[in-house]
Picture 1 (cartoon, chains in turn brown, orange):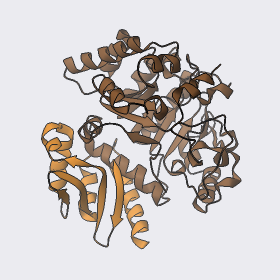
Picture 2 (cartoon, each protein chain N blue to C red; picture 1 turned 90 degrees about the vertical axis):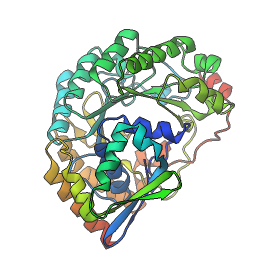
Picture 3 (cartoon, rainbow over the protein chains, first blue to last red; picture 1 turned 60 degrees about the vertical axis):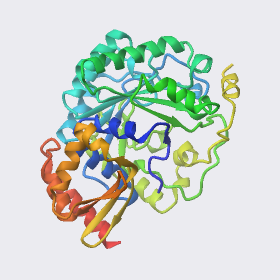
Length: 329
Length: 93
């Protein structure tokens, strides 16, 4: 089983270690990452999920050309009561990390500030993904004050490439937002939030060094994701076994739970947090059956897993970013 | 962070995904504190190649003591039991 193969480091090892070293207590981070890596590889089911993703909002203010959202209409925001129920159970079970994101832009939730505040008081490692659009100076001040562990910023390319992919965001404006966040944090001599920049590879492939040199000053770590073509017919890799059923639970905005980040895995729903606990779903019949199917190399029996992009041959990564952008219209 | 892991009868070896520059032990407080703690554990040693640390070898006893020095929201006992079960499983392979 290949673990965490989805993302590649576009940075130096000093910054890599600093990024994780500045998550807080490194001993806890190290043990948690050991669990992620080794439990999955050995098909060992932990007492409680090792990580929980909470979809505060599935709405997004952008319409990026490479995103699966072109075929997505499950829009909604998580209710406060549902949110606190999840975080409370995570706290009771000593969970180390949660992420307040899944398919949407976290910052579009009207109660996002309360959600961040509630989370950081209860869970040691809290992060979320953002397209940076809403990270104004006021938001940056709030994230620094609350000590959010890290922010994963989707930032595809620089200059005109960024403007085309990430419209309506503008490159210089987004850079200013990140610059303010990092400068303010550093001026206060604080470590958090750490800032991780992530781009799809085709947006930087022509000059990855230029991208890195540009983003280095406004971030703590730079990574790249492979490009996935959600419009193409899937081409499954035989024998692929996914790490997620042994690693995490994902809760959608309406409370539905699944064990992976696949955006349309509705045939492997484990239940709803409004009626089940996370613990019950983690040890439940549906997830145990799914684990067995993966373990025995029979994932193709599940529609979601057979079409999931994680278990598929990647499209040509040398595709020109202009070709991806042109599909938008 | 972790590239691979090898389990032996009395100890196991964790290979880091990226080598840890020795300088980081001085420059990053959290990593320095971590390395300080694990060096004091029984049977634990670092694997070093020139100025980089490429991994750590833990004795099972050392790992158990390591779990004892952090709280994990008061779920120390459950976590220690979970690791016992995990190590029992992987050592049988």
